[in-house]
Length: 132
Image 1 (cartoon, rainbow, N blue to C red):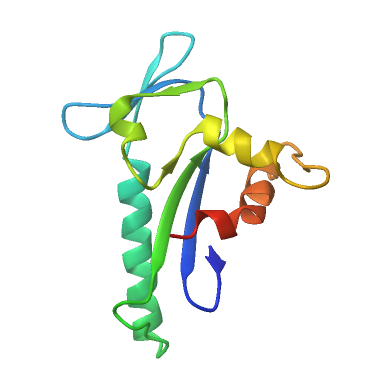
Image 2: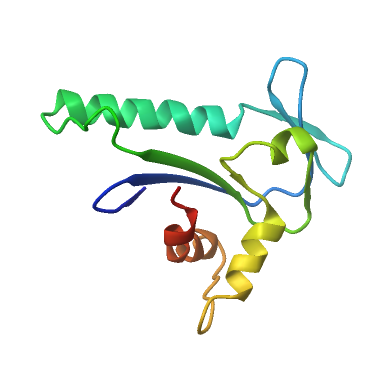
């Protein structure tokens, strides 16, 4: 969660590889390089559900947000070894690996990407370009 004076940004960072597509019931299907297929709940839908829960929680605890207060959601795919289907790429909340890599390459100074937390650390550095 990134907070600014005039909006919130909820981020979900995925380091998946292989190919990602939408299944017949809306689920996300990841085909790994090994050929294994993994079914995922759609990350965008899950993130939007978390955004609604955050808004409700803040309201219940006396910190209600105005109805029109922006609460943006972005799913960031960091692994260049992941191919996204056109259906996934069409989602405005999705930041594909190529877009992510482009942002990282154009950041001033060194990019710190230690194993595990690096993707999120770098993602937070990019929040100003992801709002909207």
